[in-house]
Length: 235
View 1: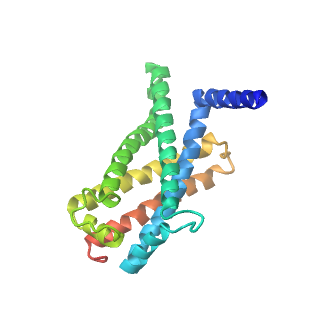
View 2: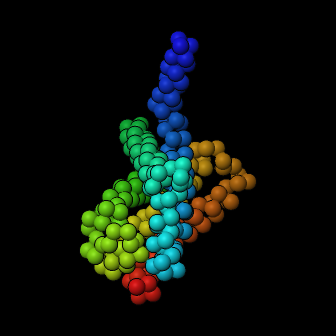
View 3: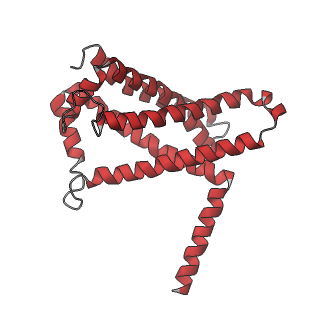
């Protein structure tokens, strides 16, 4: 028992030491960002089922609640996924905030001009993160709890999407947030690759192409849904 307790303490100490370091925070931010990126790709593919009709999208939403049965209970998979996503968001946000504070505290005034390009990317990530955090709150209230959706029907995601994006503010907020998401993914993927040591002179071109391609794919995929609703393609 003593050995087990000692090993547990050493493990917690190692994790705490890693988290307190700048390298550890960047690694945590990169890994949590990749978890969120994987979710975004899956979420976008699910959203595109709206083009197949109400039956297809509503059936897909119902299926998500039965994943893992009978081993898992009804909707357990969704709640487990939400917990993982919440943990990833918290780690990502806290690490980003703490790194931002360290960066501001350590940066001399005379150094500011030389880091103009890096500062632009950093500012884009910071403000993009704030915009996306606010959007997540709105998105949950709009299409999960249905609190702010004017014509919401519980258990009918297709109809709720159409109801939300049929309003100028519902579609507008979503479109602006997806543009911010594209920039965030573009900068974030490249930053994560650097943090995890994946980049080198031979891979840089491929990684930049991948970052740009993912950002474009996600932005176009997510934007296609509200645009289709607002133009009457989906109704």
